[in-house]
Length: 224
Image (cartoon, rainbow, N blue to C red):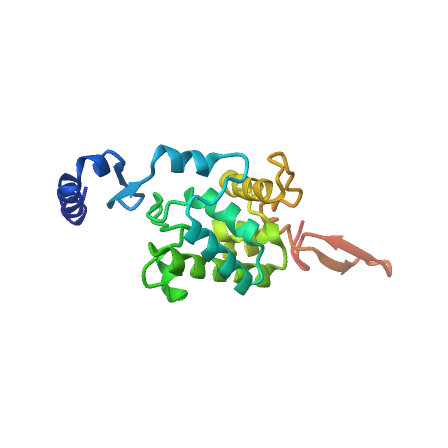
């Protein structure tokens, strides 16, 4: 582990040691893909909500009102936003993923900056940014499945594959949210992108010497 990572680990361990016993029982320490350790917090109840196969009630009345308000502003179904929040964080406003996504709608730090979300752990700011981002993906792709895939895998991946990328995580993510949204855990996602087709050999059209045309992969003037 690098020196910066060691220093970060020491800071986090120090923080962990200062937490109250009841709180520290729910705090977990992990090392991210970039080697930097981070603390995340997910109770068993929050985990159960996140993996549930049916839409559960929003556990916080203020958060429920925020979901409705921001969904209405972005012309989204509150039920859709609720399903996305449930899958992303289990309604844990302090959630942090192994990739660094934060808050109720799991905004990446760079996305938060682009959306002017100063505190991604503030539920109101997070829901404002997350619903705005989802609306932008819907406007960009004009399709709910593709918009959800872009929310998970990024719009570049969706554009590259021309549909839901062939990533098991993303395909499962889209199925889960649509299943919660439609009330059917077995909902099918028929439009799944495949790997981009590889360009085939270049075809040349040349005369066959008899007033006809010949299609060949051999450049003109080169022996086959």
